Image 1: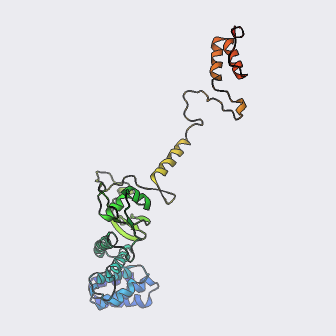
Image 2 (image 1 turned 30 degrees about the vertical axis):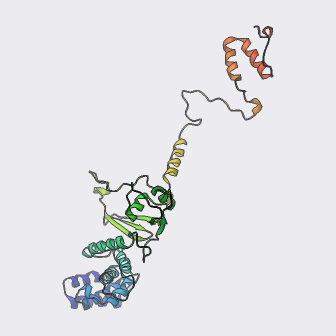
Image 3 (image 1 turned 60 degrees about the horizontal axis):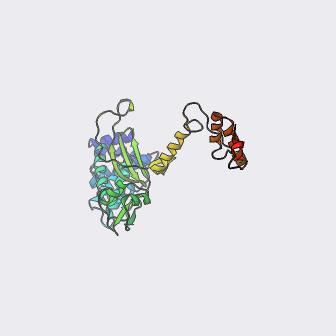
Length: 330
């Protein structure tokens, strides 16, 4: 309650009262989150409530900490803004550090709504520039990238299958046309890391990560009673033959279909498909008891035409090939 009261006083511009509340939090806080809130509150009171005018040393120290909550999130947002605008000179790869700080601020889910919208917009702009750029090879906090040189005869399907990614990712990262042509020696950027989609049912958002790096966030709709909303929707991007996941591991579509066919086959009656109520021909394990080719046909004729066909069958089994007319007479 003290933290909420102190933030309300700060928002109302009552700086002396807010400073006293934040000082209590900073010196008598029971956990790291309360102390971080008090420390940032004191820095904001010293800057007359202006985050952009707050001391960069305080923002950097709080942004580098591991404490969750409002203080660490707002400090990470302020430090990212300073890096993004060039107010923190002497730091190499400032845009990469800014992207990492924006991600920490946004994924903490502790930013005020007005700062969260700005943070998401800047984070996605830097992600597009750093992570999703085909020319950027290595970046701080970015997923591991693999660069593939196109060989003669290779297609997008073969390259995607080789690295375990989708054709859509190759086209999106490298700005390719799915029906276009590849050049021999052309370098393609691939992100083969683990993709994870986190759905927040309270905030109604879906956030996509790759190897823990933020890629994109979308709003999602959940109907009354958390049911699927009904209506007409437009599919902007559709994956063709997407990968399936089985037991937490990526499973090619063909293997999943094969597994499904085997599961369905297990539901059939033993003996496969049979018409009517007849039985299959018995199988003999002993080759000596197995009927010879043509013998069953002769037995069927014996039932129709009498003893001559039966004697022909016996003679054939004994090794004879021809009977005289006297022997074959009924």
